[in-house]
Length: 141
Image 1 (cartoon, rainbow, N blue to C red):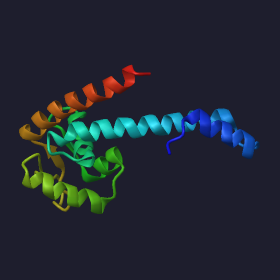
Image 2 (cartoon, helix red, strand yellow):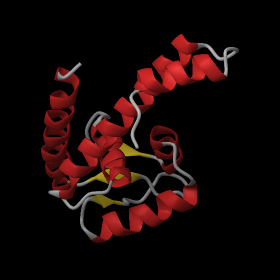
Image 3 (tube, helix red, strand yellow):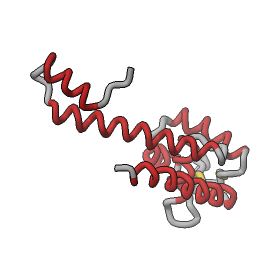
């Protein structure tokens, strides 16, 4: 059974009068729309063999000035991912030729992450598809 937001809010009003109906309605609406947008983006990304995390990583690199390069710390912050998760993600993306790890400045312990031409081409196509999918949902407001 999938109740509408208004049915849930009305049930809460009756059975839990201390809860703000307006706030509940707003949060539920945002949560449902977010889920729909995420599902639409994931569906669009399947055509490019990208996960949402891979897409976010490529998009974070692409959003910076050429040569689209970030330190691992800057990338952690940009995509809100743990260092362990990022390391695993980067290995697969490097093997696919989407990112490279050029030598860094200093002692060489930290290697920056750079978007390759192949990664740039892929994320630009994927971004277009994701934005088209999102636009269809946003138009239904």
